[in-house]
Length: 107
Image (cartoon, rainbow, N blue to C red; front, side, top):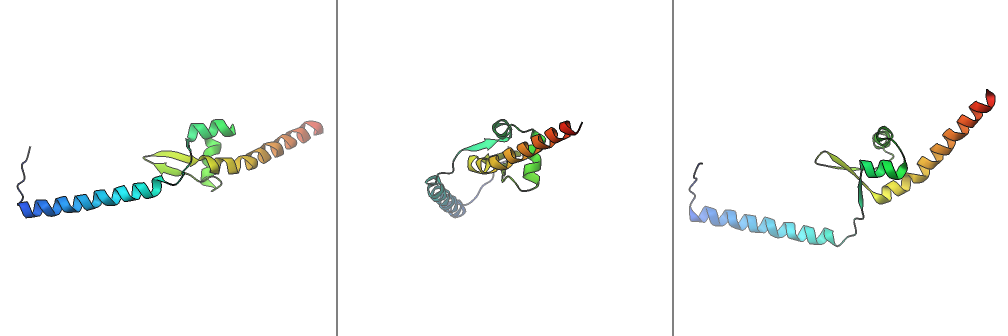
């Protein structure tokens, strides 16, 4: 272990800056904690809710259909954003089902 000596004046300046930083962080927390940020969902939650595969979910992210946030290598989605794309997913499912029915009728 290495011991570092600093003079009292430098220590007081560091302490003051740290306290200022901590105060700003508390203000930011209070400012943003009053807003309702809603529920956040992870990949598994979204796949289960939309009944889609992880690959399809990745495609929705890649093409910009579904907004997401990445925190420490983990991806999260706002529940409201997932709700917005539900009609799109259902529409594609119905379209795919119609195509299959048409193909079966032709055979």
